[in-house]
Length: 308
Image 1 (tube, one colour):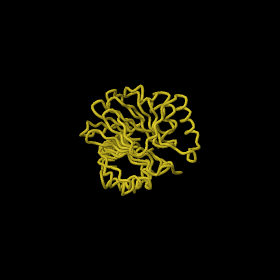
Image 2 (cartoon, one colour; image 1 turned 90 degrees about the vertical axis):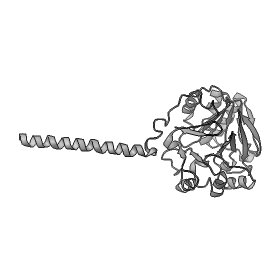
Image 3 (cartoon, rainbow, N blue to C red; image 1 turned 90 degrees about the horizontal axis):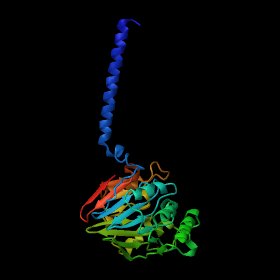
């Protein structure tokens, strides 16, 4: 290669490297502007160590447990774990709870008995010795025939835990917050999703609604009973399925914030586009665990702060 050709090659390489660097920088700037690209990646499957979380009011963690469900409510020093995700996430869940300075739970609540909600509950019971287990009552003809449900019952039996089966209209205190059970209204059903416990937590002027995997039929039953489902924060039903969070129910809730517990690239197509469109009719403050990782909400009774 001649010296002249060599110099041209070096100059061309230099130009290529400079253009490439500028292109990468431009791409990074563009992506950083799109919050869904980077937000939460550092916390996905990660843990926030914060023993004082929720001490100034109410704190709710919507844990990232993949295509499952688990949330922890802390208020006035009292704790309630709502569901415990699928088998395989229990160690992450235990670590996440302990990172908040919690060594014992006051309550563990099972919205219903599908494995993506109770898979990790036996380990949670063993690890945190909850004061009581809250779960829907099931008639013998509708008892789930699954290993996961059997494991839950064995763990409850070994621990000899108190079992609470709330009915619609029941209320209880969790620290300084009030928990009101709004469903299931339909009672026993072969559709375990529609047997989900539906409840609202109220603290100060703010409220937080949990619906498990309840589908449209049960949602309609609840609102037809005249239940007050209005809430500032909605834990979106059934991981963002199109057959939950129907128009009529959503109109009654009228949320300012929505949280969807959903696994990345899941086989169900959750959250469905039709559901997201419905939610956007009320708020653009929609948080998804597949994008944000675990979602941390704190409220002093007036203002809501969400981080992830």
